[in-house]
Image (tube, rainbow, N blue to C red):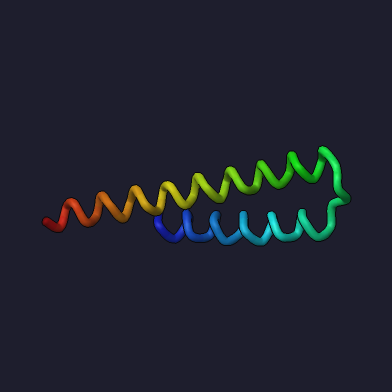
Length: 59
C-alpha cells in the first residue's frame, strides 16, 4: 500500500509540474492543478496515516 501511495504522490507532483509548464493560463490550468494537487495531498495524508498507525502498533 505504501509503495502505491508513493507512486501516486510522485505521479501527482510530475503531473502538476507538467500542467504548469504546458497548459496555457486559464481556468483549465487552474482546474487541472487543483486536481493533481488534491491527489497529491490525499496520497500524502495516506502516507502520514500509515506511518502513524505503524508507530502506534510498535509501542
